Image (cartoon, rainbow, N blue to C red; front, side, top):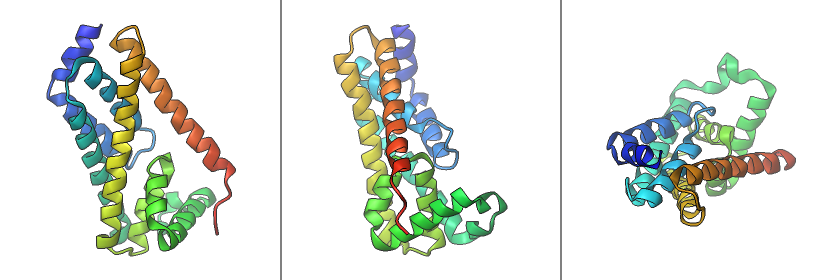
Length: 195
């Protein structure tokens, strides 16, 4: 099994698939972008291919591209008027994101990067609130790269310390990535939104 995983990871298409999954994660919160980056980071350390730096770079660029698209959707299409976004929980998330972008843009963007729906809400809200692109996009780019580095390094660290081969390390790294996500969701659910 380790040889199969190594062969798949060495394939140049592995990074293309990673980019597609991470990009899709910007719009569809059920797509496991975090898990993909963490798992490929694990494989990168365990087998040396693809290089860890390329997992971080491609993951960060794909995340940033997704964020830019969401920003443009907010800027051009005024999503608050869309019927699916009229639910009270969605409106509260968009209101929270708009407020945070006016008062603490960098904190909002970096925090939202690790919250499944938060990332979408912040990026769309930034566009809808007409936050200047020259102010917003550099922050979003830095947050995307920091997120990709964190996820890949979690996988890399696990591959370095977990015995049992690549399969075990990938399974443990996925479990850790999911646990971190669930923990952040739980903590954020306990914090009252700032009005």
